[in-house]
Image 1: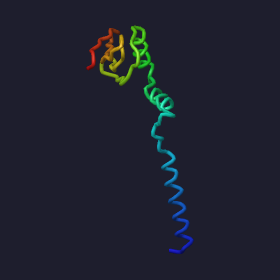
Image 2: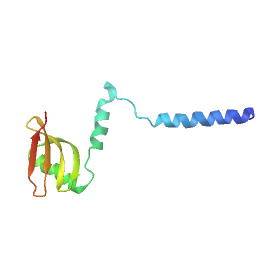
Image 3: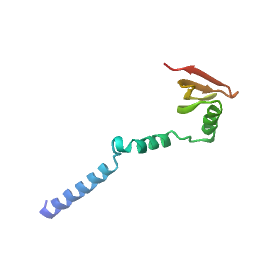
Length: 103
């Protein structure tokens, strides 16, 4: 392999390696915790109309901080805070909220 080819190969390796590092998200520090929380909240954003309705149904009854939302065969489940305590919650096809305190 010629010197020119070696230099070109090294340059390409460094360029591709730098691109991979640039895609790695930064570790949150005290300075950007709010930005990290915002990204996390966006990741928890509803993805379907049915999920939005589930979250709205809980919100209407005083629940907040809805997390871990999952579609089930006959409704939706997740966890949410109600009156200061986190509960496992489920809403069935009848629209009724069933909550179980989490320890």
